[in-house]
Image 1 (cartoon, helix red, strand yellow):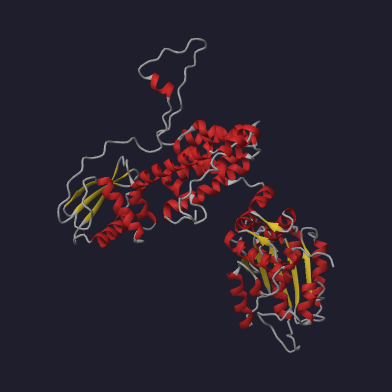
Image 2 (tube, rainbow, N blue to C red):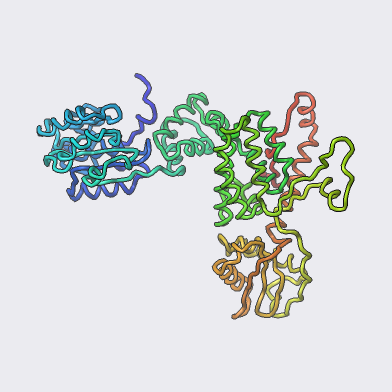
Amino acid sequence: MSYLVLARKYRPKTFAEMVGQEHVVQALGNALRARRLHHAYLFTGTRGVGKTTVSRILAKSLNCTGPDGQGYITDTPCGVCDACREIDAGRFVDYTELDAASNRGVDEVQTLLEQAIYKPVQGRFKVFMIDEVHMLTNTAFNAMLKTLEEPPEYLKFVLATTDPQKVPVTVLSRCLQFNLRPMAPETVAMHLRRVLDVEGVVADDGAIRLLARAARGSMRDALSLTDQAIAFGGGRLEESGVRQMLGVVDRAPVYALLHALAAGDARALVATIDDMRAHGVAPGATLEELTAVLQRLAVVQWTGEGSPDEPALVTLAAALPADVTQLLYSLCLHGRAELGLAPDEYAALTMVLLRALTFMPDAQPVVVAAAVGAPMPPTASAAPQATEKKTPLTPPVAPTPAPTPAAPSETSALPPAVDLADDWERIVDALEAAGRLQALARELALQGVLVERRDGAWRLRVPRQTLAQDGPRERLEAAMAAHLGLPEGWRLSVEVGPAPDSPAERRAARQRARQAEAEAAIRADPLVQTLMREYGATIVPGSIQPVDGSPAA
């Protein structure tokens, strides 16, 4: 027996089996149960979301006779009666599918409509399904208008299109329209997992996520890609193999680029791109992956909720301000159009990311002597720039305000301390551990610095106006008052200004130190040094991640 591809093998046979289109299933189910049946339906949506499938299920629902032959119109076709089996097999005499992409003229439509005068031969209703109806000519549309408006009681029209804008208004007004939505990657991934479990195919979660995202909302595309991935992987689905098949960039160089941008390190940025060129990493796929990571990063920054399988996002969320994340997303998204215009795609990628670095707050290029021959004589202003790069992404560090001794009534809930930054970090850690900080209130606490603590009022300073909103301030104020037992009437105020030594900056500094230690340990490893010396091995930028020292790690 020949192999049946997954997209056909797992095509839904009933409304209950349809995935991701609950709004259409509910509406059609209610109409079928109430016997409130329209004479013409129009299903719209992108490719592979179920337009033809829902048409066939609707035809079965209208003509199902049940296992005993006594059934009537139903929203749960039995699948075993003659009508159900023959519609599934594509040979039911009273169900006609017309592909308007290849049969778009008036003659084809008139031939179809000539059958409308005859009552059903085998079923309860005749069903005319016209796929890609927007491809019909204007003359063909005009030929069907009268029959579409007042068909015989035994005739139902089902139209499907991927481009409803091209369907004449005169046709749209005669139809009951349903828009089938592109499916979310999570919905596609769950369905793929069920299919693979039934098929007995071993697959890791990373591979399924890649396939679900590559399908871009189409379940048919997802199943077709899964078929291809099974063949590519020899019966197994592994993330590395699927990534190679799809041409998707590995996360390591993407995170390396983002860390270089966060640090304002142009040399590391260019070096990473050069390494990508040496390993054949596609610039277009890199920008696509960058936009995907930046989108998830923005969600983490604004909601405080990160994905457990991407801990690097938490580090980047603290290193990149939210407005810079938005800037990077926009530049990377629009930069994809420039790759085809440049003679060298890698050069275009370099320019896109250097442009991002240029527009970052306080970013400065390295200044070098331009004279030929003797170097430019150093000056008071030029000498420092010629020897080191200025790479601040955060506002210049201002001296920490002198600590203000806390009143006895204020410090009863806090450990005795004189350093406001230390106190504030302990408070934020305690609030996080208690689960009292969420979304923007958490970002306000992490990015802020406690600059004053007086009786009945504390003052917090944050680096950006987007954090100094009343909503997050009030939620943080309520969380602090409840957790620290502060007196009634106590208030928290927020101002905008330089905020060095915030809990977020402290965490980022500790993370950078751990990262540096991990990289140094790898480079000092004798085996790694042997591989690099004797086999020309290189360490992929961004591929080293520090781990905890616990036995589990």
